[in-house]
Image (cartoon, rainbow, N blue to C red; front, side, top):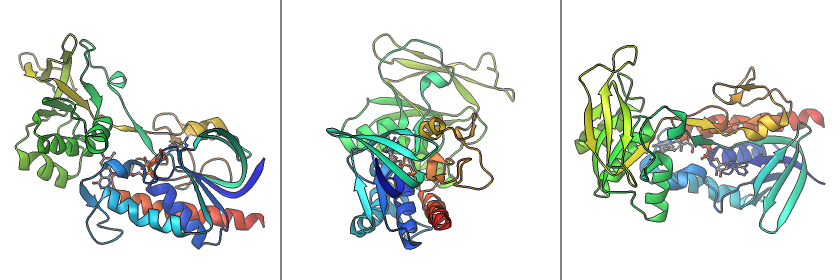
Length: 325
Ligand SMILES: Cc1cc2nc3c(=O)[nH]c(=O)nc-3n(C[C@H](O)[C@H](O)[C@H](O)COP(=O)(O)OP(=O)(O)OC[C@H]3O[C@@H](n4cnc5c(N)ncnc54)[C@H](O)[C@@H]3O)c2cc1C
């Protein structure tokens, strides 16, 4: 088994910031494993502006923000990037296995940083009755289809959930000529940034139905409508407030779950509710020498804060490795 000083899993903003910070703190050998064919993580599909206001004091799109780190990572002779490398196993002794085209690799690390990001909650994770027609997508997946693959999901859309991803996708679909009929939010206020409510909904006259829930998604082969109702303070339907909205597409934007199967596999203590590591300090886990950062550690609103805290993770890993010497 090959030995490496520091192995980082995940080449999004968290993994890249951690790699650069570890190098700045004296780590000589970093292996960065990314399952996708590009570095940048979720930023590659976030083509809207709003990134970097804190870290770079200028407004960038997601790919522009990522590019600033990708350049530094590629220029650093102490960081080996392995793309299309899917880490499938991690032990508490910091042994990792990963698959890359044509090979199964095993490596033993002095320290490990997990920067594996989040995945989206799906329709199945919230109770929405009705039929199972085509046309229901997680919002982030729809974002990838539209922004990276050039597909439009439909012509008339309803979005469930008013967090930042739902708001940004409402504007994105409107800009592509899709009629966004409504954004439905069960709480009394949007969970997204105020600037996103203004710039993504109000500026496009997209209605936001607060204190409403989707009672059913209807349609045989393809979505035909959603049925919504107003809810009271206990989130119970108020009789007589039903409304049917015709649409052919539903985007579900109801939260993210940190992707921490590797950490769990290694035997780290986990908070079952949030799927994040239990530890006294940010970026640490219950296993010495295994760290977690970025959205894998907690769900962040802004990539700038991911960068800030992940730099700290790189420094922590360097200190840990220094303490072994
Ligand atoms: C729709 C949307 C809009 C957003 N808008 C903004 C905004 O306007 N401004 C802002 O500042 N922030 C925004 N964000 C938030 C920001 O993009 C995220 O906080 C940030 O990208 C998280 O970084 P990360 O590196 O932790 O995770 P990610 O970017 O998700 O990167 C994780 C990486 O790990 C890789 N990976 C996972 N598991 C494995 C494995 N087993 N083996 C190998 N590789 C693996 C993944 O392929 C991925 O590349 C937005 C996010 C979304 C989804």
